[in-house]
Image (cartoon, rainbow, N blue to C red; front, top):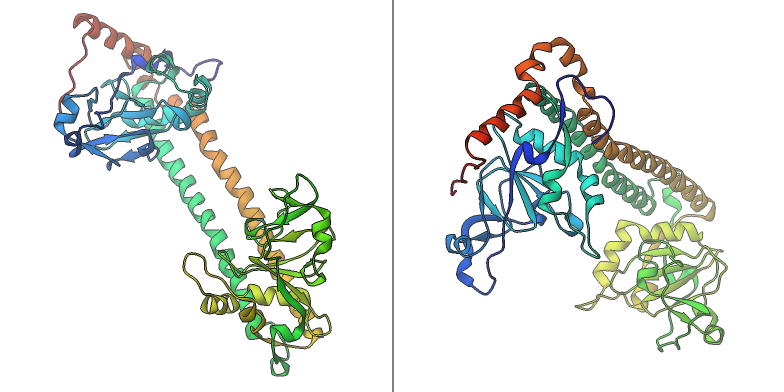
Length: 447
């Protein structure tokens, strides 16, 4: 809750004064007849969507009777109290039970609503996380939730706040969804560009292409040493598939090294040099990676090394060609094996490539790099926009609970926020009703 002067008609209170709180329990797993019933049983992993109507697990009536699981009415608001899920919240769209990791607040009629309580808890998620206590699995308690403060607007203003948040956050979600589609669109665009390399759509002289086997335009095509290399605490990096399967060499996360003497003992065709191409051949096969370093390293036998002959082929052109969907499909067609498919060296050496002149290759590379740079620029802009959009939700929530979204409404409706309509008057009314009933809460009805 933010400090400063409260908007007119608002009052500082806490969550136990606007909702009745409880938590559930877990029936014993040793009793099969407690589970697979027809009673929804929500756990913290189910929380997150605004409204939840389907539980990941269901329990039986006998399971409820023989545990601390409780029924909560539709419209109650659940919030996670344990571990990494602390602060996740949802409105129950059905009568349901929960486990003990969920605190559930049933809004007090006339004081607040399900949707207002949901949005408030959503706004306070980071505050609840900070209040978590414990080691690896921090948690908050019902007591912490009940005592959590809030600035409560008059009931009529709560409705307006909820309506505005419904509208604004729906727009944010729509914008986010559209932005999140763009990376897939860009991926398809890059694949289309690579496909154009192979079919000649980026070339001016498609009639002058010649067909070669890959081995005939390369100095050599080999793979890593088939013998298990000696281990070393330091020395020369030894790459495995996971170090290259994202399309670039990841030296930062290399977990294995070999002695320099082992590297020196390798044949030249197995030593990578700048502008050689690594090509994964087992498991995550079909990924070409240009060697862009002079730093010595070696690699496992599940990675092939292609040394292009610069007389015939531009190494960048070859890398783009090997990355194309057409060549990947061919690699899939010739790959053998069951658990881990492998593209054999003989199959790799026999890949057929249609190749234009070196001059034309250079021009195609220039065009591909230009188009990829354009896609990269868009992707950076999208990522930046997504970051802003993701922070926008919290910004809008914060403004709502400072009264900034409804300042004009308050000015236009002074009678709805003052006197008996003020939040203070409503709380006093509920306090008096509770005192008159001896402080007893209405019993929850069984679903």
